[in-house]
Length: 142
Length: 142
Image (cartoon, rainbow over all chains, first blue to last red; front, side):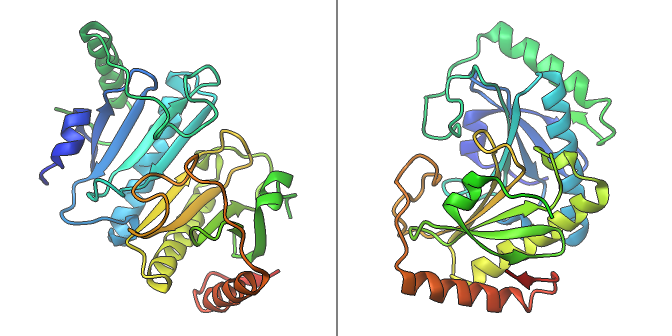
C-alpha cells in the first residue's frame, strides 16, 4: 500500500479501496466529491501507469462517475487530474448541480470548503460505501 | 462527422482529427492547451461512450498528454472533462509550467485568454500537427 499524501488525508475522508485505487471523499459539503488515488508509488501522470493499470483506472473512474451521477441525480459530472499542488496522482470526481454554489464554474478556487456535520458525513459515508459494494470494483471499506 | 459546438469553435482552432476525436487548440497563449472532442453525437459524459470508444479516448488522451508534456517540457499536465457550460463532451489537455501565469491554480476562472499573434499561432499549429502525424492515432489535419 502506498502512503497517501498528508494533504489529501487532511482534506479527505478515506472510504476504502477499489482494486487499483484508494477512494476518498473530499470534506466539502458543497458537492459530493470523490478522489481516486491509484495504489502505485511515485506516479504523477495518468500515462505513467502501466497499460493494464490505465484500463483499470478507466473502469473504476467511469463506473464511479456513473454511480455518482445516478446516486445524486447530477446535472453534470466533473472529472479532472490536476496535481499542481499535490503531485501524487489523484483524480477528482465531482457531482455538479445547477443549484450548487459554484455552478457553472469549476469548483477550484471559487468557494472555501463547507464543513459536513458529523451526522451528514456519517450518513454520506454509509451511502457511498454501501453503494460501492455493488459496483463490482473489488471495494474494500477502510 | 458531428457539428462542433459554436462556443468551442469560437474559442479554439480546429487542428484536425484523430481516429475518434477532433483535436482543437484553445486560443490562449498562456498555455499550450488542446481539447479532444469525440466524434459522437449528443454525448455529455465519458461513460456515455461505448466501451470501444472509451478505450480509444483513453489511448488518444494519454498519448496526447505524453506528447504535450515532452514537447513543451511541462511541469505537469492537467486533464479535465467539465462541460458545465458547453455540454458537448470535450476533454481539456493543458500544459502547465511552474512559471505560467496561473500556477499552481487551475486555469479556469483565473486569467482571461491571451491572444496568439498570427505568427505564433501558425508556428504552434505547425508544430502540433507535425507532431500529431507521428503519434499513430490516425491524425488527419483539417
